[in-house]
Image 1: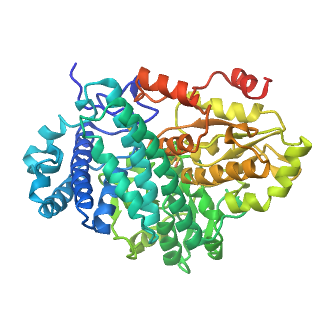
Image 2: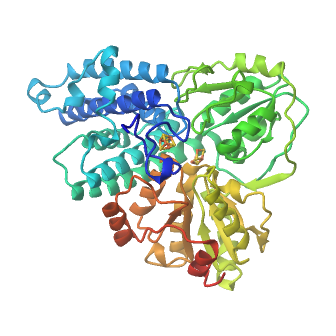
Length: 548
Ligand code: SF4
Ligand code: SF3
């Protein structure tokens, strides 16, 4: 049967091969088509901007922002709204045509077809059908092009978060666009693309560093924090996703209104930042990782604001309470616009909240986090002492994503069965598999050190580099540190590539290896970097710690 779509960018792709009829995530073929087309025209725009830079001409910031937003739109569980994506295609074509006029005549002829294409809406679907993932016939070239593309999507998302806080890096944007344009270039060999993959990882480090700087300059350094997971009596607004600037605006606008604000999933780490602690109505975290949202949003009773991925197409019962902003889109749900640097107007959400009952309690207690780099550096003496005395034998990095597949129970069981002298370093929503297990502490150091969101995996890298320095080691791989990472969407891809670029070897990746890695690309990652999948919990405990 002919494919209605083709997407294999996330861990939950159908049959570990590819979604061809409809997305497991809920993405329909007509939405997949517009995403494919948006990537195509954004590649074209990137080829134009790259050429302009080669000619010594400046590319405006808002064009950089358009590229990153477009890539963000196509991340798993970010945007299901065909109409919104179609409008983004049109806008991108218009911007590209204008910039094309600035390219020297002699250079224009050398641009790829994607840079020159300027179809009408009537042409969109026919074009989309031939520019998707399967346009690349050679499976290894396709695999590398997609690996780079997914890494760039993650980099775009992190850049966007830095950009809304007023931090831009022309260097990162220029690389992102040039690398994205190279995924159109048929003259590049697998060897060239492998080098570009690693380069993407090194820019991943720069992008995450930029975001870390943006976040900490705006909101302070995360610090050890106990976060309430129960509920209060006021009506509430639940904010999810990764955008701290949106949260800040929501907290400002809800102050004194009698409406509380709760975080969900990847917004939990916002509680660790000093700047948000001044809001008495910042009530706590409600629920778990993204995939539990259907059940939890139902029970929350009040409006929910999705600032980024991961949104699940909502049930009718709460659709009217689900709001989107930024790159997120869900047909039938209201969207709040707002340009970078502008104040978004959340008053309609606040008004709706006032008429809603308070959230239904689903759990009580607290969870502790806030172990980003500065906080861990402050505890360095204690940690080094614990390692030297043998109280801490090893660290295991369990950063990444959570997801709905049953196979992910592995991570809960792995955490539960870990030897008691092992400490988990985590970031991202993967932590929801074990952050409520009360795994105790070692000489006052909690056994689950949560650095924050997935982008805060950067903190984990800094912590590893700091430990390497303190212990006087030459190689990061000589640390008593193992990597057992869970992935789901494309932000995890840039984190992975970033770690590889820092020289980290023997990363275990689960619950399954990406479908977009061809056998040859997998072989390369295994041989050069020691990348491996996961086994059973007992096998892996034996492998990592010599015991089950
Ligand atoms: Fe399938 Fe994942 Fe693509 Fe959704 S994002 S269509 S689940 S591969
Ligand atoms: Fe989670 Fe989507 Fe990846 Fe940011 S929120 S880690 S899955």
